[in-house]
Image 1 (cartoon, rainbow, N blue to C red):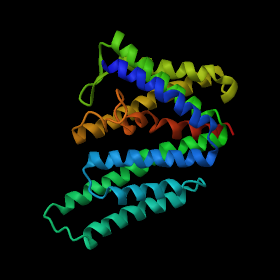
Image 2: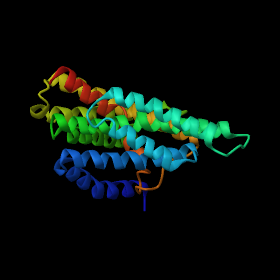
Image 3: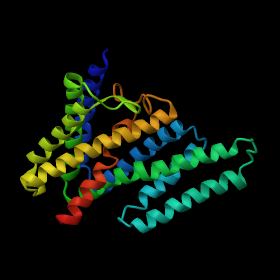
Length: 265
């Protein structure tokens, strides 16, 4: 089965399921669902980093996620520092692993914790924050990024000639980037009655989301290049792992929430 066919089938199966969860789940249950997704993405990150303490790191990340339930960033920041300190203490002073490369193990684990708590927890918890503002805002975010990724893919396939950033993501093109921006703009423009944005504002927000989505994709590609893998896992046929599906939301969900909350609410 071709890669495109796998992507389409997986998208058709998962798309309605994700839509139903984000639309119908009560806020608290959506928060728990997002926490589970963050845990699974963290396990992928730990595997990529080749860190050893999966469960410990996963629990640390879950605690950081739940620390944001009330939207208190101070508690979150304190826990991020504490989790790094606890991991370092565990490895450096408590663990009986006296191998000569223990410092490499410590570095891998700390990188996995920092990456997960910043670039997995923060984007995912902002879906919950968006939901608290309006039940449709998370869906708009999903549709905007799905449209952005889809249009970017077909623009890149059909018109792509000039590489965007060949050393990190050889298949990305400047033409595909324009497609990404166009896809998200169309979705944001079509939801003006919900967002309350004006036309020019919708174009600006849509363009920003398209650009930020591609930046997140490139950012995660850099991480995978460093780890010398193509996909974060093979969990989703044609799409890779959970981390591969979250990359476009790394910067977009915090951006949209704080834009709306800061300027519109």
